[in-house]
Image (cartoon, rainbow, N blue to C red):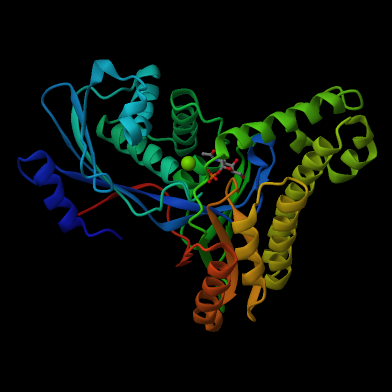
Length: 392
Ligand code: NG1
Ligand code: MG
């Protein structure tokens, strides 16, 4: 948890005035345990909220100005009138909270006064741990609460997704915002991305921990490739409609249904993309089954199968993620290891025996550096709660 006393001092340095009247909110980052590139296909995902994320301090103003500052980007503050909210490339990270304000205004619940806002992010940027969703969700939650509006967490997740998609031009799925809004400590979340039905699944493996490994390979090309994969999935749906006229999303097909008709897909590449999606959705459901039976080893094997499919069929892993996963799987006590998030760089997640964590850091760090020339970072993580107000 961030040091609130220090953040309060920092708030007063940015904005002056008194500490009285400052309120505190937090939203976590998230890690997806399995179910990758399934959300925008209307399939299942299995994410969990982290115990670190974004802390937001805010204080009402008497005028109609929003002033955004961040401890992560200390050389710039963005002062924007409530009546002038628009996307501007040069406004950098503040486009995320601005997107949320825009969506709140669209829905008739925009702030009625200005605010001073200080963000403190503990999530590495561009690593696939949802720093942007965390900023969006904490902003929406805080401004709705301050305005005296009831907060429906699912509606908040959708609003935050629109802020990311419409305002910021990323065609993201719903998983990130949803997990950040609805997470619960000690539990992962089985989410059906088409209907948004979800349930929490206890995930507190006694002798094992989740270790996130950051490849520190920033995801340069992610936007174009991400949208390319989405287009390939839509292509598959169109061609499969010859057999399944009602088909709207790939996630509606079982592996057997796809396999019976995949010959209708002309491109071999598109066929492989489709196969990844339907099999990955199936793996999510199998994961919940085996976890509910307490079979962690089986879950680890499903994590491995997920990564291999993302590498061979969906082709979104890349040299760095593959090298890290390969090194991780060689460490005794590792039940499974896979990339998490969009891919191309960013993070891996591994299920590691507690007694093997030190060896894991050492051995994976060294082998990864040798293979790629990059330094890895590791975080042993627990599953935390979704967005909330912090009472002080
Ligand atoms: P990351 O890599 O965490 O940004 C992206 C999408 C998700 C999902 C995953 C792949 C964004 C903001 N998020 O996650 O919705 O599609 O890729 O499973 O684009
Ligand atoms: Mg993001």
